[in-house]
Image 1 (cartoon, helix red, strand yellow):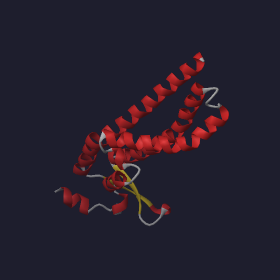
Image 2 (cartoon, one colour; image 1 turned 180 degrees about the horizontal axis):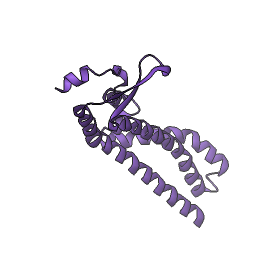
Image 3 (cartoon, one colour; image 1 turned 135 degrees about the horizontal axis):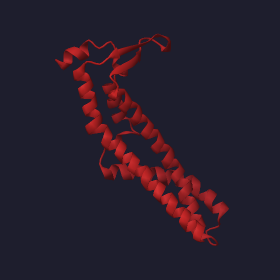
Image 4 (cartoon, helix red, strand yellow; image 1 turned 90 degrees about the horizontal axis):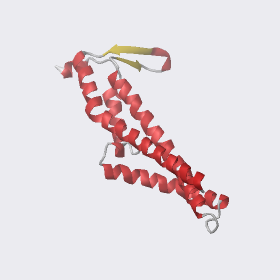
Length: 166
């Protein structure tokens, strides 16, 4: 029964919310969000390391390590975390977009270009399927990203407290 509703769907295949979810889930930047915790942390650590490659020389120029070791470490880590925050924002916005498309009872789509947008009301079984995907697949990813943001915020606060005590 679900197949018949999907087969009558006028939305182009690449614009169907479930296919957008599958594409996002397999994209190189997004796939580790849904992977194991170790893979996710490893990806975040790589991003931190790559951005640290650029941030550490700036921190060293601002605070010579042989004189101001603590300031150098704190500013280098803060600079390196900027790349992590930017990537996390991109990940979060991508997953939120797909979540909103899956949760919506109406799908907006373009037939051939931006000038001819249409809407399609999802049948109940498609809407139920999409909302189950959100509940069991997307919510854990969004929770993981939110916890990562919370952890970074805690590190920023701790760094600020340490900086103020110097």
